[in-house]
Length: 572
Image (cartoon, rainbow, N blue to C red; front, top):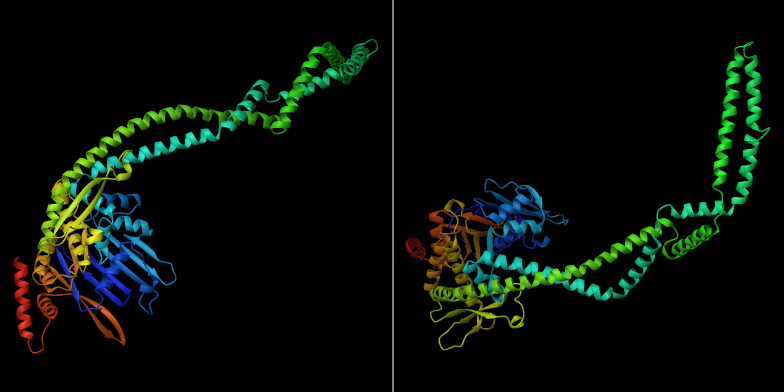
């Protein structure tokens, strides 16, 4: 329920505050007083388009704030929780600041949000039907949504739409894989060639360097053999380093008793003799590995040539060739998508069947709901001054899907048709209804959906979220007389279940309201501004008298008429 509204510097509203209660709230005033501006401000705070031109002349920004109480709608609470906004006490305060410098802001319970987030929170809280909202009834997609809401099969439609979404996703994936497979045919041939070539090569990390070193050693085996032999002879041959170190060791050992310092020197000479011996032995072992195998050398040279060719084709380095093989293998693994294609075919077959079954069930329920909706809307529009009118909700299969799968909302399209006068053939609303007729149909449809929402409610009473606040901008356009009386009572009945704000020019509607707000225009300090005032009973009678048309000299008569009308509508 909208419990408070504050508007500052919006058009000719310089500062306005309202505290609102439940039921029907009538908003009246002279033509041009600013009633439509009030609706425009509400549209802005609910997430509608905001224009800098709406900022009051001389102000830097306009600000609109709306407080809603007893907010228990699960969708709203889920959105608040997702955004980290506390709404546990059931209070939601929407605030919109529109600045001339373009730095406009949206806040919910003091937390900055985007316009889209503001709109997502506000949408379930308030249904704003402006003078042009009736034109939504010209959109056949709206007809389908209205019938589904009336029928109360929201869960079934959600299930269907989820199934349709999954089906579309699987079908898109399948089509992409099939298209990719066609485009990849030549690419796959190339990849398989590269994979086979590199798989046959079986290049291992470090192999290239190892082969190079082995070949280099084999090609220089004669030189290495001579060098090693010379070194071995110098170390371990007769008169070599080993013999000389041994001779030095023996000489020092004989004289070490004469001087203790010679002990350490003799030991070092002995170590030198041992090192020379070990080195000579190691050189001998190495020399025995230097045998030249011509066939092995040829095999290694051929292997090195294969690796060089791979380098030239696939990146120039050993690491690049190995990475190329891995990437090609990974890309070829996508060939496993053939398995995915088969899986998707099976999945789509099951989803096709499920879609058809759900679409058939939706169609059956829509056909069942169309007749009572037609009857209920017809009854209301007849009460609203169209005694010969007939309204029909026609359910028919969408021509484009008759031989194919159902669409995003099932097999059906829904068309609202109206025959406004006896003897006429009637037709779709978009083709035959005038603005006044559309307005009455809109009221009747909203009434039917509201009644159905109450009837379909299955939650416990303490869990039942209140219906959204409904705002009508001159829903009584084109109505008068006894029809106005009916409309006032009709809106009062709606107000008994949900809060209704109605901008009206009919005293019959205003007299039926639980609350009455007057919008008046005045000149203050040389500037025109609008004021909002919640009227007491005396003020209501005076405003009703004005709306009835006070004739000079007959003020008492107009007031008496106003009191009578107020009493009549209050008792109804």
